[in-house]
Length: 354
Image 1 (tube, rainbow, N blue to C red):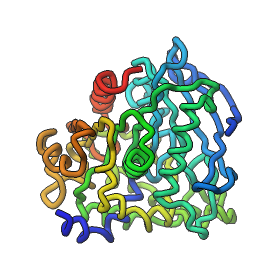
Image 2 (tube, rainbow, N blue to C red; image 1 turned 60 degrees about the vertical axis):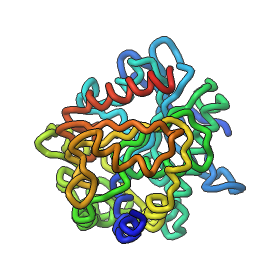
Image 3 (tube, rainbow, N blue to C red; image 1 turned 180 degrees about the vertical axis):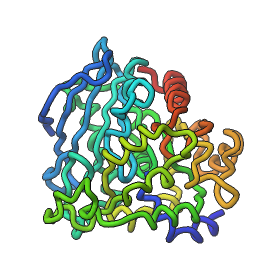
Image 4 (cartoon, rainbow, N blue to C red; image 1 turned 45 degrees about the vertical axis):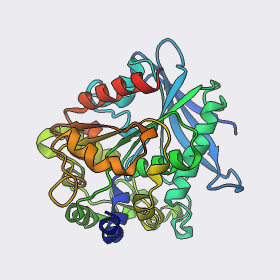
């Protein structure tokens, strides 16, 4: 198994495409039953470094006020917090709305270098997977200490997608300061053919209509995004997706960094997920072409995925697996999204209550 993982090490880098005091910038009504704040949190890029950068996030509390547990939501590559609170038909596609209604507070972030968070110059190669994990660790501590939203949370449930799930592995395994982890859109065996096809759809973000306004912005030089019109094949099981979702996804897409690519493969092959000592839920779309297939993981059932993933977790993780039918890589953005939200809610009630 180790030999297989090393054999795909180079192409694993490609998966990075998929996935203090706060200063409130605005307050808005997101889900009708919740109250949300847009916040900017100062962070450092590593231990001992100055807090010169900021992470943007949206803190949403249930109608009755903050819960004891907050779900920290980390998006994947080329996605921002919008992935978690999707503006198109949010009653169907918003994880935030669904989990707020279930009684959980949520804090959905833009990773460093993404969306409204700070964009360190790519040429410095400062944004790597370890950077992402350390910043998530800083956010976890800020949530626990009441620095975000003036409300200390007793428990933090880390919920992540794709590249964000790699950061979640590192954070939970290294810092061991969360109460549970939900990994979505990430398994340990990969479909290298599909990954290569996604890599072929990348190009400089400053050439894209969405980012061309940053053509002369040094902080955007070197960032990559997907060529217009390719996200459907990259991240979706198209028969299970609404064309309106695909259009909204294209209009709100984000970027990914070379530093993330260069540092992506070690967390897959170094066993960091085996260091996680809290309950773990793994959720994957049955039609996720990036991880499922004859040359990758048998996603025909939860039992087959459980068998493939179990060697990468300890008994303390109490690993549970859910496979969502008629869904590809982007679980939140398929018509079956409510099934995934229900699975997350049920598992969270069992392991990390509101």
